[in-house]
Image 1 (tube, rainbow, N blue to C red):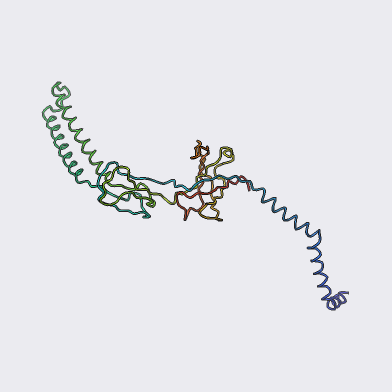
Image 2: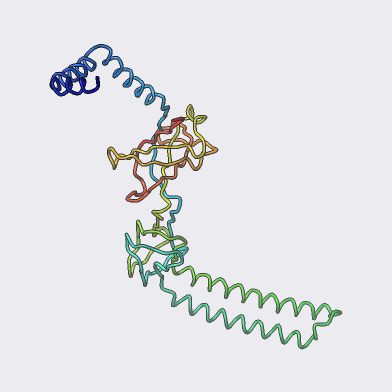
Length: 278
């Protein structure tokens, strides 16, 4: 029996292959095959449509950003940074002329030394008695007040000298510098520093969508500067107070930490899609 089948298959191999091909073509082209294919397509569409999202516009902002300026006017005698420079926390950036301040400090220091010597002299004279007379008390407190005043004056000038050098309080990159060597400046000129590693997306969520936002919610960011590219992230902060746009529209600020913030800069605009379920 088996041998007969083998012999039959060998003799009619082309016929068998032709029947199989015809069967496959009939299945794919008939309504049954089409319905099954369409069913699979509908199933994929339904799964895709099940993803519920809502969107909000926003901008890339840094959580670490500072604008440094001198507390007093003066002449710039040293500038140690330029736009684009990588800066480290505690690094000096620029200095003002301090020659006059240093002279004032030396004078204040001498005044303090003299006042301190006067106090010590009064103590020697009175013996710092517990039952000092009124005249002795007046003389002692007067000399002590003079010493304290001289000390405060010396420390004030010392602080002014320290403030004559701008020091960065963060790691980051210099994004703007509004002073130059030899320039006489006032307190409005600044040096701006941004930490690129602290960039996040600040979304302006409409009040009607506020209840749909939650911490660690997945978000897809589409930036105008990167057409077709998606930046993934998660909600890290939800504002507890509404803010108002320049056009007068209220929104809830929502901060989104990005999985990657490389090649991003402060101020880029875009759209955020908040995923409610997957």
